[in-house]
Length: 146
Image (cartoon, rainbow, N blue to C red; front, side):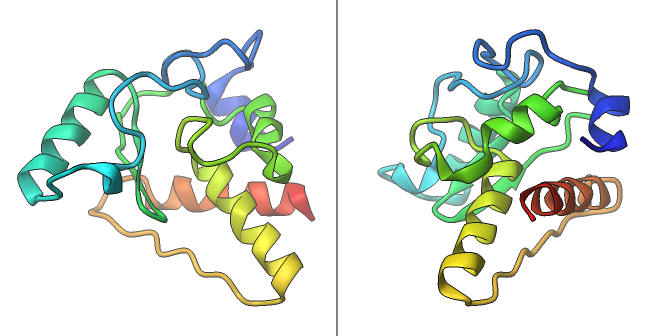
């Protein structure tokens, strides 16, 4: 457990019942979790789908192997120790659970330990977009896996 998770996001009662980022964010909320599955992948279609997901509190979305995380500027209970453990160990296929930075960290760690090939995270965005916080969650997940 890290102080980051407990102090900022509280402790959900049952991490298997969440339906949105407000409630913990591990179950699918509708729409496309992976925008690479869209029939027409254009700038406008991506923005529209991200907007729709954001309005449903689904702030994390895949585009293939890329994870897009939108900063809601409010605190959701999606970075708790229970959710951290939920995504550990490659127990869930990408299409079985909601997109999450903990799953990305878990996949990278599994690839490093199974193949010995280095993995890289590119975390970018404008000032205030949540880059530092997201980096802390990636590091916390990898450290928990070690």
